[in-house]
Image 1 (cartoon, helix red, strand yellow):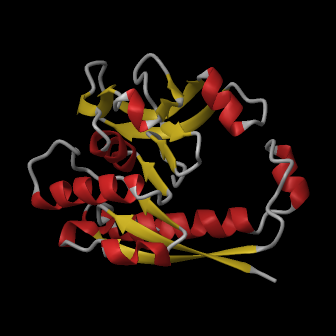
Image 2 (tube, helix red, strand yellow):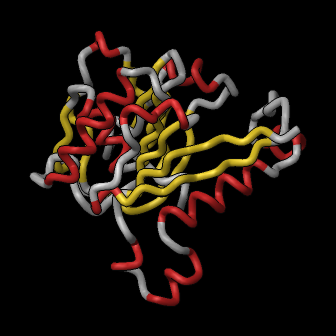
Amino acid sequence: GQRVLRIAFLECEDLGEYLSPACYANYGGYYKMNCDVFAYVANLSASALAKVGITSPLPQPVRVEFEKFNVKAGQLPRVDELSRYDGFYITGSLAGVYDDEPWIKRLNDWTAYAIRDGHKVVGISFGHQMVVQALGGKVECNPNGSSVSVMSTTLTPQAQQYFGDGRRSFKLLYHHNDAVTRMPPASVGIMEMGGNRTTPNNGVFNSSGTVLTFCGHPDY
């Protein structure tokens, strides 16, 4: 039968406030873009997955159900109900994780708790930086400048082993002004994924498979 994955979708920006009505109607915000991406990947055939290096597809069909939380409006999954979800997805934002905003501070504390409690967390762009900061790292305005283009990230040896598909790099669309300038303490168990000259840290992960972040945007 079909397996259902329930994901709490922590939306940290309403792109409808910034995109033109026509663009927003066509592409939607983070929520719609991610729903479309997950649905597309979940329905790919084994042969299509093999072409991109995935030789061990999931053993059964998967359907992803998102429950959306408007983080800027103060919505977060209750910490006593985290076990209801298979994972948590933190989106991008026009804000910086170091901004002095109540909703950012609440998300920082929530993220630290969820990860340390062993729940699976994915962070994209702002979400990537939030995960690093919540675990004790540092994020600042990128001293090397902004990234607004498709760029390549060279994987560390540990990340190559983690992905296990033979690739040494990958490309994503990047759109950010900030960067991780200090990793969390080694005791946290978070490892660098790799980077490039503009942004040396373009993602993190851990060996237990509960944390995965990308500075770039798979959803774009």
